Length: 66
Image (cartoon, rainbow, N blue to C red; front, top):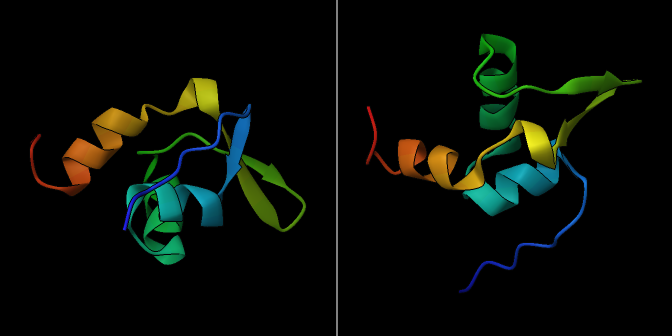
């Protein structure tokens, strides 16, 4: 199964979870810990593309970076 990354200015927590291959709860935990910078929009969070490094996060999740 291939992952498709859609180019846009921001991700929702659900979209970022799909891109990273983790659960939405895991994304929320990383936001709460400060590992992912996000903005609160009502009851939800949005993560701006400029604030997140997808390649670095993917490598961390897969255990390639400390």
